[in-house]
Each structure stands twice: as C-alpha cells, then as structure tokens.
Image (cartoon, rainbow over all chains, first blue to last red; front, side, top):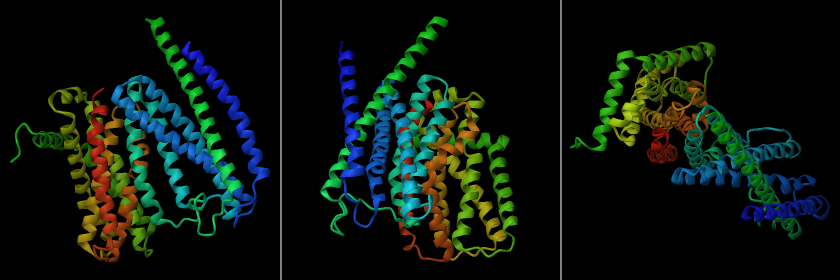
Length: 232
Length: 226
C-alpha cells in the first residue's frame, strides 16, 4: 500500500521533471542573453555545472551511505551507495565531455590538464577503481563492507586534492560564475533564473534515476536470493 | 615504559613477528629491492648523459619509489591470506595492533629500500642535493604517507580475488596528494631551499599522514574482520 503511494509520487515527479527540463532547455537556448565576456558558448553552464553538481551530490550520498552501512550493516544502504556511484560516474563523464567541448571553443584544445580537468580525472579513477574493487570481491557482505571503506577513504582525500592540485597548475576555469561581482556579475537575473532551474531540474532527474536504479538493484538481489534458495 | 598488555606492545610484537617472517623468506625485500634497482638502471640508462632539472629528478625518484612500493608493500597482508594465517592472527591480537604493526613494518621496509636506493640514485643520475636535512625530511615524510595509504589498501586487496592487479589501481588516486607534495618538496630540497620554503609541503604531508592513519585505524576492523 505504502509502496504504491510512493510509486505514484515517483510517476508524478517523472512527468513534472519532463516538463521542467523542457522549460530549462528552451530557456537556456532562447530566453537568456549571452554572458558578458563569453559568446554563445556560455550557455554550456546550464548543462555542465548542473552535471558536476549532480556528480558531487551523488558521490557525497555514496560516502554517507557507506558510513551508514558500516554503522548499521543494513544492505539497503549499500544498494543506495552503488546506485549513487553509478549515476555519479555517468554524470562526471557527461560533465567532462561538455567541459571538454567548451574548452575546445574557448581555450583552443579539448584537453590541457587544467586543475579542474586533473581533479575530474582523479575522481573518475577513484570511482573506476571502486567498480573494479566491487567486481573482485566475492560475497555480498564483503562487496558492501569493503567498498564502503574504500569510498570513505577516497572521499577524505578530496579536500587534499582541492588544495594540492591548483598549486602545480594554473587554472583558466571560470571561478564561481554565479556570485562573481568584480565585473558587475556576469550573470543577469534571467540567466540566474534558468541556471538555478536547471540545477533543480537536474537534481530531480538524478533523484528519479536513483530511485529506478535502487529498485532495479533490489529486484536483482531478491532474484539472486530466490535462486540461491531454489538451489538448496 | 610500555605495558605488556598495551596496544603499543602488541603492535611491536606484530612488527617483530613480521620481521622474523620476512627474513625467513625475504620475499618482499627481494621483490622491492630488485624492482627498485632495475627501474633505476632503466631510467638512468634511457636518460644517458642528459642534464635534468630538479623537478624532473625529483619526479623520477618518486615514480621509482611509488612503483617499488606497489610491488612490495601489499605482501604483509596478502601473505596472511595466502598462508591462511589470517584467522589465527585475528584471534591473538586486536585489529588496531595488527594494523599498527603492519604499518610500522611497511614504513621500515620502504625506508630501508630508500637507504640503498637514494645513494645509488645520486650516483647514477649525477645529482647534487642542495639541502640535505630537508631532503631527508621530505623523503621520510613522503615514504610514511605512501606506506600509510599502501597498508590500508593492502588490507583491502588481500580480501579480493585479483590481488596483484588492483593494488596500484586502488592506491594511486588516494596517494596522489602525497606524491605531488613529495615531488614538490624534494625538488625544493634539491635546489637547496631552506626549510621555511618547504613548510607548506611539510605541514600538508603531516596532516595527510595523520588523517589517513586515523581513518585507517577506524576503518581497519571492517576490512579485517568479516
């Protein structure tokens, strides 16, 4: 009964997100002016920044789920963790691609080891290692527990990377474009509206994907458990 | 005084046990020393007589140290699984003591390697160190950081089915801050800068070591007991 109710909410949210994203796409292409200092390429922020935001959110949620798993040993937290990491990984790749396309136009090359590019490569390496680690562990409990430990260890090195990487390389990446006031804010109110709508839309989209992925993982686990029962 | 039932005593006991066991077979020592020296010869040979800047000298040194660590430092935990002594060890000592003992063993192993490797590196690469005390400090701090990350990752990979292949893959991203800081700090020391110039690196390295060792102590039991 309760499950039905939440499924209805999810279905309603899906339709709402669909129309919201249509509004964001139209808004980003037709309703907003170009940001000062950049040409039409500035429109990438309506996609690139929300993607990075979703990736950070997903990895944060995965680390929190890892801690919760170690505290409670409830398998559901591991399901949240792996689902969230998978979606975060997808969005990191999307953010890398959109960023790299933008870099080709603005900086003249797809890739030049800017600090932001370096840190996202390290991030992708960490979570690729996470998948490799999970596939090399045998039992379900081992997968859950040891990968939780790794994701926590990886997560605590992130602040060090943020401090260390910009020291060796000089960045050209636009800093904090939302709140910049030096050049009289490069973001007009209209841009801000669409930008935050896009972040909101992408967050809903992430939540919807996450719920689907979590349900899928639960079904998979139930089937595996059932199969094991039948074999005995 | 160290109490006989205390954690430190037990950690030293584990360290002593690992040293005994290591000198019986010399598996990790042989692997790490021969690997380091082979790599050094390859690097030195392929570079020839070219003049290298301080940054490249220090990068090459840390690349050799990193890959040597990746060949030898996983052995402390993998050995326990392969010889099926892990379960007995779980009975005789608390997890924290085991972690600390094995961490000390790895630090000693890596520092012992560097005692041989670095003089050879200086000779082969025709390097002159500007500020020797700072250089030694950077090497010791950097190696401690590398060992700290390698020890907990060794514990993780000893539980998996693909032991060798995963070690470097898992360790590298977590170890990257240590490597970057050590490379920078060592380059400064080779140039002959004073200790105050390298203070940032020293502080960050110390901070990283404290954070990763603390996290490992808290998390080790989840890896070890399952």
